[in-house]
View 1: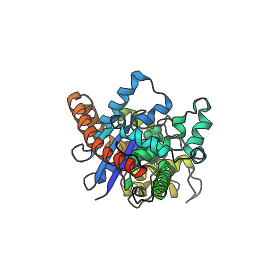
View 2: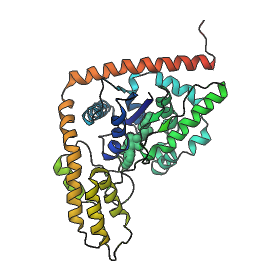
View 3: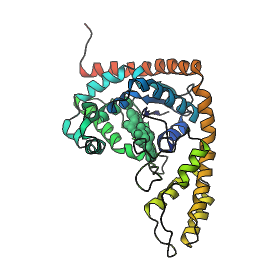
Length: 329
Ligand code: ADP
Ligand code: TRP
């Protein structure tokens, strides 16, 4: 049995990228492994959320995890800030994380470029906090999307460094979990890049059928193929990438052939894609709405999750303290 850990920041509603990149893979393996799934509310602080909205965001994401199928009776589902040991491990790992390597992280460089007015130390040490989340339960597998690959490499580097410095075989090599098909990147429908909360191009698990149709019908395309078997432009390739994730293989094949023979009508392609996304999202949305109004259930899940997560975290942190030389008087 392997240990699996993953989390998503509580900065907004979950979108198809979060679902197909991380959540669905977690859900697939939650019954066969020792699984921890959490809401990364500390990570969300790097962008200074409004205190009035913080709790609501966590509550929404919690309902979305549950609606998507995280089973709190099997997996340990918890809120990061309910487990104080994560901050202690973060502090300890920070002592062996070097400013130079943190400054070279692509996500950090990207934030510096985009938000030069808010380059806080939390942002710089974001990968250390993420490593603490993962190593807190000594995870073997981490279900994440492609954008988190570098953060996971850093987690492994911090783990190896710790093991080398203290001469132990304590932390495992935490590997991304991709089911052999490579890590997923769900593109946006706005022509380039990934789907993301901060990109403003999300199709959310909570979106109504009408919203989904509207968003998909607005997807950027091009003037259509001029010669048979021509290469797809990025916006069109992105539509096909999402179709490969949500639609049946013969649907993808049908539209690929239409594209290759220059007979494709993008309107038909989008209509089909919208219906296939709805078929996947609608049942999840219905469950989310039901769960979101059930306060007693949510607080029970959070309480029990925190207890289970703390037990695992406490064990790791006390072992780490001992390895590092802390002793009781
Ligand atoms: P966002 O990028 O929307 O702010 P997060 O950074 O909190 O979301 O990502 C949470 C998880 O969802 C991570 O595992 C990340 O890899 C995954 N993820 C986010 N966007 C995508 C995407 N477009 N494609 C694949 N995975 C994604
Ligand atoms: N950094 C991740 C993201 O933005 C979220 C995250 C925080 C995470 N801690 C984690 C993912 C631990 C997996 C494991 O997507």
